[in-house]
Each structure stands twice: as C-alpha cells, then as structure tokens.
Length: 319
Image (cartoon, rainbow, N blue to C red; front, side):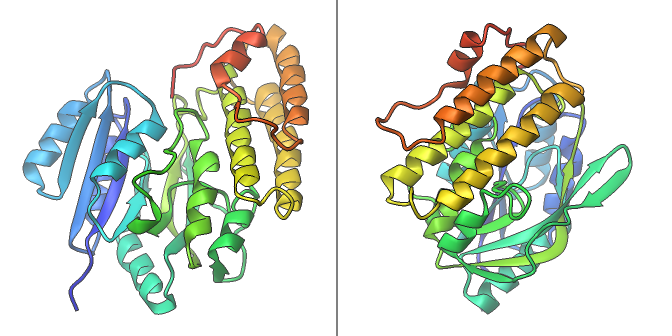
C-alpha cells in the first residue's frame, strides 16, 4: 500500500536558536513521503539563513518568505500550499517525537478517523510536565471533540499535536485570524467537520516555554486577543445554529477565562505596568460579560481597539 503524503506546517518568527531542533525532529520522522512547509514570517534574526541551509540540504523542506503578519496568517499561507492527504502543525520553537506522524497515521487508518489528537507535554528550564487532563476515552465524533475542545483543561483547542485529514480545511474557509490564541477561534470549527476523532495519550509533542514567546512576552494585547478569540467562537456558534446546544461548554469557557487571565496578569511575570493591571482586568471582565450574550450583528471584538479603549499601552510585539 502506498503511503500517503503528510504536510507539516511550520510558522517561523525570530526563532533562530530553536529552529534547528524543530526541523531536525521533523526530518527524523520515520514516515515518508513528507513535505515540510516553513513560512518565515518576516524574521529579523538569522531564521531565514537557517531555513535556506535546511532547504538546500533536504528536499522535504519548502520555504516561504512573507512580511510579518502573525502566526495565524503564516499557518494560512502554508495550508494554501499543502498537498498532503494529511496535515499537521508544529510551532518552530517546539519539537515532536520521531514516531508522531507514523503512529497517528496508523491510528487514523485503524479507526477511520479524520483527526488524531496526540498527547503533549510542557518543557521549561529542563523540566518536562505531561499534560495530565486529557480524556480517558479514545474516540469522539467530530462535533463531540469540537465541543470538548473549548474546555481548556480537558482537550485544549491547540492547533498543534494533531494530525488532520487535509480536506477538513476548505479553500474558502474563514482563515486563522491574525490574533494571539487564534487556534481557539479556529480548531473547534475544523474538528466539527470530522466524522470521527481519535485520541491517544501517548506524548508526542513537546511544547517548549521560553521567555520571549507569545506566552512568555505576555502583554495587554494577549488579554484582548483572548477575548477576541472567544468572540469569534461566539459568532461561529450563533451562525451555525449551535448557540443553545453549546451553552454549557461555552459558559464553562467563560468561567475558565475569568480565572486564567487574573492569574496571568496579577501573579505571573508579564509586560503590563503594575498601575495598569487592575483597570485592565476590570475592562476584561466587562468584555467577558458582554460575550455571555448571543451576538446581535456581525461586529467582532478587535484586540488593538479594545487595548486602546482600556487606556493601557500595548508593549508586546505583534503576533
């Protein structure tokens, strides 16, 4: 039986130091054929030089250069070029185990699944902590997985650590948005299209925390990007007749959002000035209260506009 081509989508922005580790882990996959589509999103360090060396040495690697547009648009650019029967997404400062593609592909075939979700761990300062809360069940319908994915402590809607049948991504799709937490706004919609979704708790994906990542360089825009992602999800539910049936899951997401953000803003290191933190959270809580209600029009929350209304300087870099 001919093995299917698998496309790996890798957005890159100023990750020269970590990029070789990521690319080496992709090229070490024991599955072939493989295409690695890397989008350099206007990096200002030596990332482009690293990519040129890898592309010259490895025919699997295809490099796309674009002006800085953000993580979501970088994924969109790569997906538009992907030709594999399956696709997976890896962030350029992370890495994956060498059997990730082959194992998840085998599970997809054995179970007839359109998506396979793998286990993952967080890595920082030499420590490795597996994510402990993945469900015990090994199979979902697509709509079940989509609804579960907006529970941030059960089956998080991260775009990575998943193998997707590429046909789930439609050419006329609303793309990944140019905000932080863009996967919360997009992944549930993709999962909902799947007939069946398989889950394995085996850890394949290593999510590596670093001080200058989106999480490490946390600032005002992160706060309002998270609200904007929830708002995109809210509109999607309303537009697809899911507002009522998803209410328990959606209300739980809002409760989790009320707990998570104060911890990040008040208790963890970030770029938000001390004097601005309480006013920022007040505005954020007001916004979450607004998001409890069914949208009445097509207008959506914009992170930059919300940040300016909060009268707090946006100090972290764009996504």
